[in-house]
Image 1 (cartoon, rainbow, N blue to C red):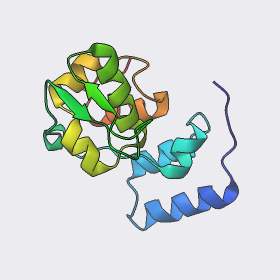
Image 2 (image 1 turned 120 degrees about the vertical axis):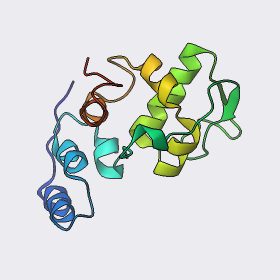
Image 3 (image 1 turned 30 degrees about the vertical axis):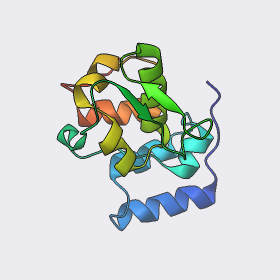
Image 4 (image 1 turned 120 degrees about the horizontal axis):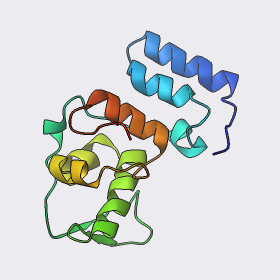
Length: 137
């Protein structure tokens, strides 16, 4: 993986956000990690405080949020492991809290947890917050 330099302006901004309590320390530190994808570093990512916040369905087809979809009306079948992994990858890397709560299911997330489900830096934060359910790989 190519390591990218974090701009001094972004680094200062993220540090101020952490100091002010507007950005969780673990997410801020991850966004300063040069190994994080540039897109995720700039846009940010979200991790709930508790997995019980996730109330997504366990089966059936769901509509992919427009901001994450490749085309209008895109759907993902949760019973298809590849489709579920693709949806979950998008939700972990770029999904907003509302989309994560509505579409991620804690048991399916744990069953889908693998070394390449999302950006490795994002996965580290999820694993650190939920070590029993989502162990580091």
